[in-house]
Amino acid sequence: MTQPLISIITVTYNSAATVRRTIESVKQQNYLNIEYIIVDGASTDNTVEICKSALSGSNIKSTIISEPDSGIYDAMNKGIKIAKGDLIGIINSDDWYESNMFMDICDAWKVSGSGIYVGIMRSWLNNKEYLLERRSHLFLSTYMILHPATFITKDLYLKYGLYNTQYKYSADLDLILKYDAQKVNFYYIDKIISNFTIGGASSTSVAVLESLKVRLAYNLITKRQFFLKRLKLTLKKIIGR
Image 1: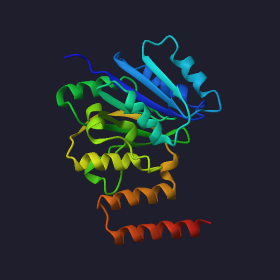
Image 2: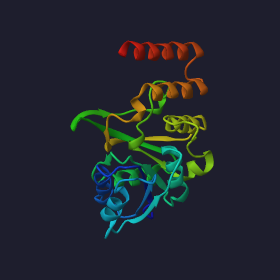
Image 3: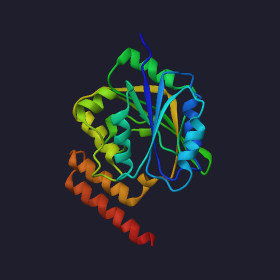
Protein backbone atom coordinates (compact mmCIF):
# COMPACT_ATOMS: atom_id res chain seq x y z
CA MET A 1 0.00 0.00 0.00
CA THR A 2 1.22 3.51 -0.85
CA GLN A 3 2.35 5.55 2.13
CA PRO A 4 -0.35 8.11 2.98
CA LEU A 5 0.43 11.79 2.65
CA ILE A 6 0.41 13.40 6.09
CA SER A 7 -0.45 17.10 6.20
CA ILE A 8 0.75 19.06 9.22
CA ILE A 9 -0.71 22.48 9.97
CA THR A 10 0.81 25.00 12.36
CA VAL A 11 -0.91 28.29 13.11
CA THR A 12 1.44 31.09 14.13
CA TYR A 13 1.25 34.66 15.36
CA ASN A 14 4.35 36.31 16.78
CA SER A 15 5.72 32.85 17.54
CA ALA A 16 9.40 33.59 16.94
CA ALA A 17 10.46 32.27 20.35
CA THR A 18 9.04 28.77 19.89
CA VAL A 19 8.14 27.92 16.29
CA ARG A 20 11.56 26.62 15.25
CA ARG A 21 11.29 23.74 17.75
CA THR A 22 7.86 22.88 16.35
CA ILE A 23 9.18 22.82 12.79
CA GLU A 24 12.22 20.76 13.73
CA SER A 25 9.96 18.15 15.33
CA VAL A 26 8.29 17.69 11.94
CA LYS A 27 11.54 17.68 9.97
CA GLN A 28 13.11 15.05 12.22
CA GLN A 29 10.41 12.42 11.66
CA ASN A 30 11.54 9.20 10.00
CA TYR A 31 8.67 9.53 7.54
CA LEU A 32 9.06 11.17 4.16
CA ASN A 33 5.58 11.69 2.70
CA ILE A 34 4.77 14.93 4.53
CA GLU A 35 3.47 18.33 3.56
CA TYR A 36 3.80 21.18 6.04
CA ILE A 37 1.42 24.13 5.99
CA ILE A 38 2.13 27.15 8.18
CA VAL A 39 -0.67 29.69 8.49
CA ASP A 40 0.60 32.91 9.99
CA GLY A 41 -1.71 35.70 11.11
CA ALA A 42 0.47 38.54 9.78
CA SER A 43 3.03 38.41 12.59
CA THR A 44 4.85 41.62 13.47
CA ASP A 45 8.00 39.84 14.66
CA ASN A 46 10.27 37.60 12.57
CA THR A 47 8.12 34.46 12.79
CA VAL A 48 7.79 34.10 9.02
CA GLU A 49 11.52 34.56 8.47
CA ILE A 50 12.26 31.86 11.06
CA CYS A 51 9.79 29.50 9.39
CA LYS A 52 11.37 30.05 5.98
CA SER A 53 14.85 29.57 7.40
CA ALA A 54 13.92 26.41 9.32
CA LEU A 55 12.33 24.83 6.24
CA SER A 56 15.01 25.93 3.80
CA GLY A 57 16.74 22.93 2.22
CA SER A 58 14.23 20.48 3.69
CA ASN A 59 12.76 17.70 1.55
CA ILE A 60 9.36 18.42 3.06
CA LYS A 61 6.95 20.16 0.73
CA SER A 62 5.94 23.32 2.58
CA THR A 63 3.54 26.22 2.19
CA ILE A 64 3.68 29.40 4.26
CA ILE A 65 0.72 31.77 4.28
CA SER A 66 0.95 35.09 6.13
CA GLU A 67 -2.15 37.26 6.21
CA PRO A 68 -4.64 38.58 8.77
CA ASP A 69 -7.25 36.14 10.03
CA SER A 70 -10.23 36.24 12.38
CA GLY A 71 -8.70 33.87 14.92
CA ILE A 72 -6.94 30.55 15.36
CA TYR A 73 -9.81 28.45 14.00
CA ASP A 74 -10.11 30.60 10.89
CA ALA A 75 -6.39 30.00 10.35
CA MET A 76 -6.80 26.24 10.91
CA ASN A 77 -9.60 26.15 8.35
CA LYS A 78 -7.39 27.90 5.80
CA GLY A 79 -4.78 25.20 6.27
CA ILE A 80 -7.27 22.34 6.04
CA LYS A 81 -8.78 23.70 2.83
CA ILE A 82 -5.46 23.54 0.99
CA ALA A 83 -4.17 20.36 2.65
CA LYS A 84 -3.78 17.45 0.25
CA GLY A 85 -3.00 14.77 2.84
CA ASP A 86 -4.92 11.63 3.69
CA LEU A 87 -4.30 12.48 7.35
CA ILE A 88 -4.18 15.95 8.90
CA GLY A 89 -2.44 16.84 12.15
CA ILE A 90 -2.57 20.29 13.74
CA ILE A 91 0.26 21.25 16.09
CA ASN A 92 0.48 24.58 17.89
CA SER A 93 3.49 26.82 17.42
CA ASP A 94 4.68 26.28 21.00
CA ASP A 95 4.14 22.50 21.01
CA TRP A 96 6.07 19.76 19.24
CA TYR A 97 5.77 16.20 18.01
CA GLU A 98 7.50 13.25 19.60
CA SER A 99 10.34 11.86 17.51
CA ASN A 100 9.50 9.32 14.82
CA MET A 101 5.81 8.91 15.54
CA PHE A 102 4.36 9.68 12.11
CA MET A 103 5.06 6.10 11.07
CA ASP A 104 2.87 4.90 13.96
CA ILE A 105 0.01 7.05 12.65
CA CYS A 106 0.62 5.75 9.14
CA ASP A 107 0.59 2.11 10.26
CA ALA A 108 -2.68 2.61 12.14
CA TRP A 109 -4.26 4.30 9.11
CA LYS A 110 -3.27 1.41 6.83
CA VAL A 111 -5.21 -0.95 9.08
CA SER A 112 -8.24 1.19 9.93
CA GLY A 113 -8.68 3.88 7.27
CA SER A 114 -11.05 6.82 7.77
CA GLY A 115 -11.37 8.11 11.32
CA ILE A 116 -9.87 10.10 14.17
CA TYR A 117 -6.55 8.87 15.56
CA VAL A 118 -5.67 9.83 19.13
CA GLY A 119 -2.43 9.15 20.99
CA ILE A 120 -0.76 10.09 24.26
CA MET A 121 0.29 13.66 25.00
CA ARG A 122 3.15 14.67 27.28
CA SER A 123 2.49 17.97 29.07
CA TRP A 124 5.19 20.39 30.21
CA LEU A 125 4.96 23.05 32.91
CA ASN A 126 7.78 25.53 33.49
CA ASN A 127 10.06 23.48 31.22
CA LYS A 128 9.54 20.33 33.30
CA GLU A 129 7.68 17.17 32.34
CA TYR A 130 4.36 17.39 34.14
CA LEU A 131 1.94 14.73 32.95
CA LEU A 132 1.28 11.98 30.43
CA GLU A 133 -2.35 12.04 29.34
CA ARG A 134 -4.62 9.57 27.58
CA ARG A 135 -8.17 10.72 26.86
CA SER A 136 -11.10 8.95 25.25
CA HIS A 137 -13.99 10.40 23.25
CA LEU A 138 -16.26 8.43 25.58
CA PHE A 139 -15.79 11.15 28.20
CA LEU A 140 -16.40 14.27 26.10
CA SER A 141 -18.98 15.46 28.63
CA THR A 142 -16.07 16.05 31.01
CA TYR A 143 -13.03 16.79 28.90
CA MET A 144 -11.78 17.17 25.36
CA ILE A 145 -9.61 14.62 23.59
CA LEU A 146 -6.02 15.76 23.20
CA HIS A 147 -6.02 17.93 20.10
CA PRO A 148 -2.20 18.12 19.61
CA ALA A 149 -2.10 14.31 19.76
CA THR A 150 -4.91 13.88 17.24
CA PHE A 151 -4.88 13.18 13.50
CA ILE A 152 -8.09 13.35 11.45
CA THR A 153 -8.53 11.92 7.97
CA LYS A 154 -9.25 14.54 5.31
CA ASP A 155 -12.45 12.86 4.16
CA LEU A 156 -14.11 13.65 7.50
CA TYR A 157 -13.44 17.37 7.12
CA LEU A 158 -14.85 17.22 3.58
CA LYS A 159 -17.95 15.31 4.66
CA TYR A 160 -18.81 16.89 8.00
CA GLY A 161 -17.25 20.35 7.85
CA LEU A 162 -14.50 22.47 9.39
CA TYR A 163 -14.13 24.43 12.63
CA ASN A 164 -16.98 26.73 13.65
CA THR A 165 -15.34 30.16 13.82
CA GLN A 166 -18.15 31.51 16.01
CA TYR A 167 -16.23 29.91 18.86
CA LYS A 168 -13.03 31.57 20.00
CA TYR A 169 -11.72 28.83 22.30
CA SER A 170 -13.79 25.66 21.90
CA ALA A 171 -14.29 25.05 18.17
CA ASP A 172 -12.11 21.95 18.45
CA LEU A 173 -14.48 20.51 21.07
CA ASP A 174 -17.46 21.44 18.91
CA LEU A 175 -15.90 19.73 15.88
CA ILE A 176 -15.16 16.49 17.74
CA LEU A 177 -18.67 16.42 19.22
CA LYS A 178 -20.13 17.03 15.76
CA TYR A 179 -18.11 14.15 14.32
CA ASP A 180 -18.93 11.90 17.26
CA ALA A 181 -22.62 12.56 16.67
CA GLN A 182 -22.08 11.24 13.14
CA LYS A 183 -20.63 8.00 14.59
CA VAL A 184 -17.18 8.42 13.06
CA ASN A 185 -14.55 5.93 14.18
CA PHE A 186 -12.01 6.79 16.88
CA TYR A 187 -8.75 4.83 17.05
CA TYR A 188 -6.29 4.97 19.94
CA ILE A 189 -2.52 4.68 19.67
CA ASP A 190 -0.71 3.75 22.86
CA LYS A 191 2.34 5.90 22.17
CA ILE A 192 3.38 9.47 22.90
CA ILE A 193 2.42 11.59 19.90
CA SER A 194 3.03 15.16 21.00
CA ASN A 195 4.36 17.50 23.65
CA PHE A 196 2.16 20.28 24.98
CA THR A 197 3.10 23.46 26.83
CA ILE A 198 0.61 24.19 29.62
CA GLY A 199 -0.75 27.70 29.91
CA GLY A 200 -2.65 28.53 26.72
CA ALA A 201 -5.90 30.40 26.25
CA SER A 202 -8.02 27.28 26.67
CA SER A 203 -7.29 27.26 30.42
CA THR A 204 -8.94 30.65 31.12
CA SER A 205 -12.36 31.02 32.77
CA VAL A 206 -13.79 32.54 29.58
CA ALA A 207 -12.64 29.50 27.61
CA VAL A 208 -14.06 27.10 30.20
CA LEU A 209 -17.42 28.89 30.03
CA GLU A 210 -17.45 28.60 26.25
CA SER A 211 -16.71 24.87 26.46
CA LEU A 212 -19.68 24.50 28.81
CA LYS A 213 -21.90 26.24 26.24
CA VAL A 214 -20.72 23.77 23.59
CA ARG A 215 -21.48 20.80 25.85
CA LEU A 216 -24.91 22.23 26.62
CA ALA A 217 -25.61 22.59 22.89
CA TYR A 218 -24.88 18.88 22.44
CA ASN A 219 -26.95 17.92 25.52
CA LEU A 220 -23.92 16.58 27.36
CA ILE A 221 -24.87 18.64 30.39
CA THR A 222 -28.24 19.89 31.59
CA LYS A 223 -29.23 23.54 31.90
CA ARG A 224 -29.04 23.14 35.67
CA GLN A 225 -25.51 21.75 35.48
CA PHE A 226 -24.53 24.58 33.16
CA PHE A 227 -25.94 27.17 35.56
CA LEU A 228 -24.15 25.66 38.57
CA LYS A 229 -20.83 25.40 36.75
CA ARG A 230 -21.14 28.97 35.48
CA LEU A 231 -21.95 30.16 39.00
CA LYS A 232 -18.90 28.34 40.32
CA LEU A 233 -16.70 30.04 37.72
CA THR A 234 -18.14 33.44 38.61
CA LEU A 235 -17.60 32.94 42.34
CA LYS A 236 -14.08 31.71 41.73
CA LYS A 237 -13.35 34.82 39.71
CA ILE A 238 -14.77 37.10 42.41
CA ILE A 239 -12.98 35.37 45.28
CA GLY A 240 -9.76 35.34 43.33
CA ARG A 241 -9.67 39.10 43.06
